[in-house]
Image (cartoon, rainbow over all chains, first blue to last red; front, side, top):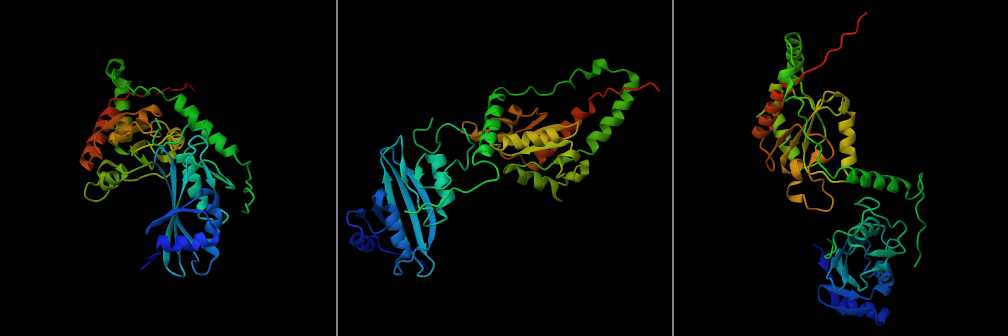
Length: 146
Length: 202
């Protein structure tokens, strides 16, 4: 069975590499700064100890004060998993770095989040609506929609 | 962080999207009111004469006895339609066991399921491609009015916004018995239709 890595222990190893990047860490998840998200993602993918070669899912949550993005990672080699989160406080021009260049699986999921949640991913090669049609006004999964 | 180049398309990157979006926006703008249901069959009795009545009887009998539905089932009501087609309820008793994949060969559209605005142009295209005479059955709550999704941001509130509907079958989903009852109602409606036959002089 897939072993969920402890967020606290992994966060310590990340903090050794990138000081100040980890905001908080619990047993389940690591909350990181969005500026250093792509560096941390690259580190988690390329380090042999972690080898997170598989991006399971990205989801976005609207907490009204901020958006939270949840990245679920897994390693097929080590059969372990990890959840990292990042937050985005700007509601009008919500933006986080794209991780398409690290995991291609992020392509359609980031487009879906952009479409329904209105968070743009800087560096995404083809960021446009995927579910709704071009010209649709608003982002329906936001809590303040309608 | 390295960023890969944008993908190249045969069309320019957003031309197809703009076209699709424009088509949907135009369809929404022109579909704000329901299309009136066909009511020409209501006062046919008055206009008839004896000669045409017998021709009508044959034509309408032939038409209602071989209604072929087009395959256009966007959502879950389709399963009740499939059940109605299968051996227990056996729609072939009414000469309509053949579901036509080509709308050119179909007379009847059974709108089994929720329709989104993104799908609406395609459904209307299927309807437009069907040859006359053609009829539409709105099956289920979503087909009638959008159902529980009516207030959603992308659901068509009833098929009669985009195509004229002949028979409404309530239910969520309607049981096969209800569907068959609706089809029988449509048979009665077809039986009262009147066809103008124009004889060209040689």
